[in-house]
Length: 228
Image (cartoon, rainbow, N blue to C red; front, side, top):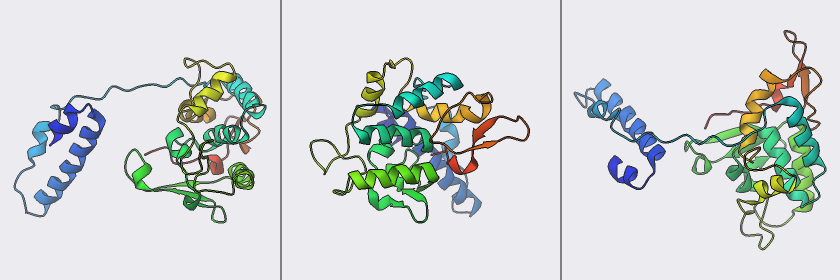
């Protein structure tokens, strides 16, 4: 079974499937249903997936300039909002593009992403800080039809193209070697660690001052679960 998945080039899926099988046999051995765990021999038998590192801006001043560029983006307003939400929530671009209004509870301030849409196939709740709520309310006022937050320009029944967000970054002058839509996740991870005082100008992210460093860092409310 694992070899069939691997043969299709789905190396990461094969490794996740193996991990699930390992867990099943561990429980079986612990409960006395099975005597041994045959999956131990498969530990190094599968091809390891190649990690693809997407371009991301992590230098604070450059990141601040990017956010200013996004704020002044003259393309579709919905595209501008999508880029801002990526910066605030740091979820995968595909998850945001395919997000549906039924997944959002603005009163409870939570975005509930179903397992079927997650890479790790687990339900995932994302906290919505004030800036995200504001953007979502603006988006709802623009988009009062259909199920998708970001529908295609051609039809309300499909989400925006997967190339839309990267194309917007190119229009702003950022090449694929400088910044990608997926790169906001890497940028987000670096903000608290790399930011110098007063240099990170992200007006759409709430800030606090660290007692240890005396520098600005994203508030805990702006953070999200990065796993999954």
